[in-house]
Image (tube, rainbow, N blue to C red; front, top):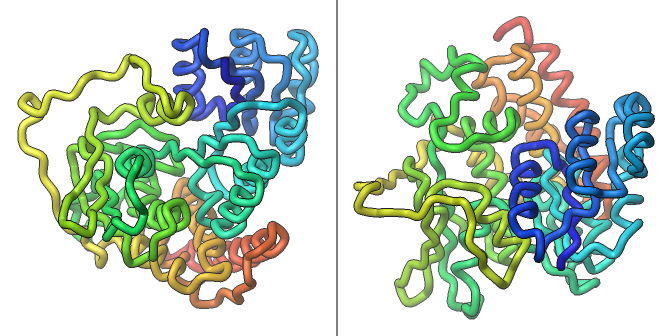
Length: 388
């Protein structure tokens, strides 16, 4: 029986992780949960799962719901540092980090420092602090198993392969809702248009990132760190059907791919039960019924966020941390209808131009770079808000 802490349990990945664990009661047991503000939902999950420990990272929410958790006999940790306390409180077998944003970096490091297997759905941990995360895992001997469908696919393709045999990693992208939208029309797309993803059901921030293709840029940086490959050895190709979840091109010309119906419960379950596999509620793939699978190049002119992410990765230091922080601010401003869709890459690009890099070897340096990038992004957004 594996004990699991689910960070971000009220979000899309977190709720599906809870569902996966509930379907495998003799093998998986959720013993701790966390959320940001969703206290009522977190309490319902805690009661249903019988956990004794939970965390609300928003201090105001934690104080509001303290009595509710006391009534059901659950110890409630409070605030961002409460996550670290939660991780240090029990000897978990797995910590699944499905938090959104760079706030996931500190608990990622806390789990790895203790040698706990990390099921990672918080890609920003590796984007903002890739070198720190990988060095922490190596020092403790902790395993990182990716949960993102693309990186899970690569992880599965590389099982048993010599890393020197890899020529290139190829990430697939659905293309999002604006795959066929002209550059002129992108100036006028709405928040509602952006959140209407054609394939995946995700949180609002991740859905916007998918539409700008920043999500794919972050995944390039994630793959760079996870699989120890150069930025330019990670390619991206648009695959609207989302059946081929990613591919690995080998030096002999072979291309290994992982295929399946788009269902996040599959990579979540794989990460939680690795190296074993068990039946799941996912539909089985019928290629005959699916028909044609198509692939096309990314239009990097219409979707500049991908190029910005790759360039930040090439520059190293804390450029990727700044990119991620600026993007979080820009997406928030777009969702708040303060800037246009096309304003997101504009804000990120200007922040990267003005960024003063730090080495990025410590949490303190990463946080400092992020704070500076957020300040710069907010100033840019304030100045441009009236011109959207």
